[in-house]
Image 1 (cartoon, rainbow, N blue to C red):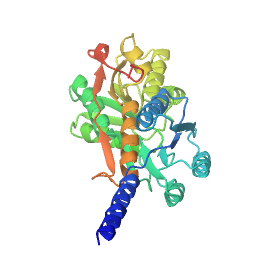
Image 2 (tube, one colour):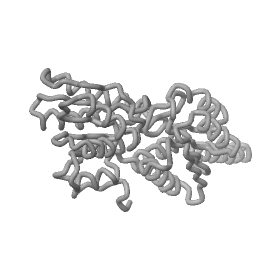
Image 3 (cartoon, helix red, strand yellow):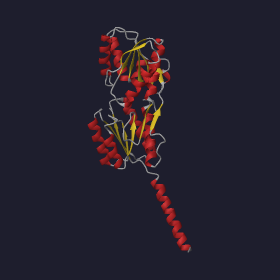
Image 4 (cartoon, rainbow, N blue to C red):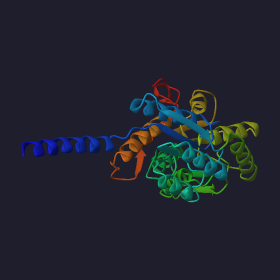
Length: 312
């Protein structure tokens, strides 16, 4: 009898150890597919992901790839991650809806998938900036500076969820001021400096009086400022979203860029890896969407801003 009880105790101990091990899965390989590694935002995001993954496993393998906003390329990269046997994928979806079949395939292969920066249908969870709030605070700055009256342009961009949310946040604020006239809100400046330059040139040629511009990201804002200088148009308030290194320089220089609602790509990635680790071990977040708050950087406070390239 005592032998039977001892055997049962040993068996119970072994089963307990196995269960504990099953609930302590380790990240061994991470695949990251991002919009463009030519953008410092995504470079910082990749660094944040690798740093957090190494906290869980110093020997983790991290592969960060640039999808270059090409959906087919992103599909191929995810297929490559599946073939390589990664157990965590971070995806900055080129198209939130169209990416779903690739993510479903990854999850069927037993891979945890976390979206970063923008929504991704089929992901286990998503971490991004509160982009609605970012649009709100960037455009509230415009309203305050104009005293609630003037002609404003919303310089739109690629229709990923982050951009749509920023524009919606901006519009919700501008609507509260009946004397604010939105001259244009549907021109896609492609998220780039060149796009911001081209769209702004067209707008300034078309509209004789422009008081302010909200650009959906910093590169577009810098392009818009360049266009205004080329056409000798002054006294335009330009705001945006990102808090990128270039906008720090612009806010400290003689430009018409006045404010940017910040993002923290490093922290987005760190949180995404942390959530991914939890999901792998059966701890799903209460809300699959995690939103990190944005703060407004202006000429008055930029000196105190800890940007994307600050030591971590």
